[in-house]
Length: 244
Image (cartoon, rainbow, N blue to C red; front, side):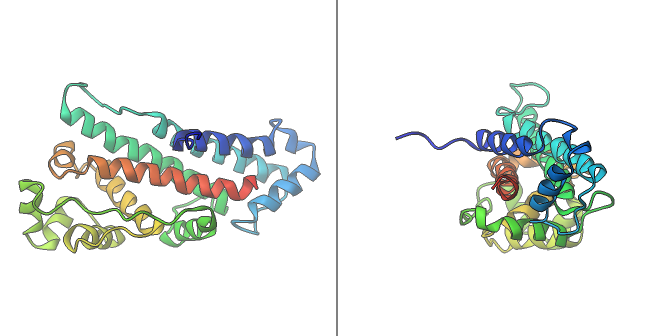
């Protein structure tokens, strides 16, 4: 019995198939029929995608940049920033692996849903995930770290909810998803919730609030690994809508 392809292999394969729809490069500048066929596929996500060569060229470049960023994150199998012998360096690497995967996911989403400028809203991500749902398997629940698995985590969870939100620099939707998962111990049960948890951890990492030592102390390293792979899995499902 052959092994199931890994996530990094699946992402590489599906992007190759999507890339083949566009290839050869720049052919859309002289092939109106190709523009029409590409626009039809992109319409799975937004019927307002244009058939013009200029639009197809821009979307292709955005998709290529986004997918390759997420691919780079997934291919980074042993992420370390700093000393390889240092647990802090490994935790930091795992954090930034998620950040890179998220950046690629966000860029690709912009290309797919035809929102090439400006900030994406929660509804934009929800739309992408919803349209990709038929290609996603049932989400395997993601449990929070056990309350008593870490003295540091136990101390923070025993405080007012606002304390950890302030400590992590959380706002709006990020506060809700962290509160629901960490304080109320509700497992992540859907792809949408997994995305928003990844987004929350990405935000408090890039803004410098969630330091590697806390990732280590709070037993979050395996969580970051799962969420990084979840982002890639959603991306694979979305690209399969174009590939098919």
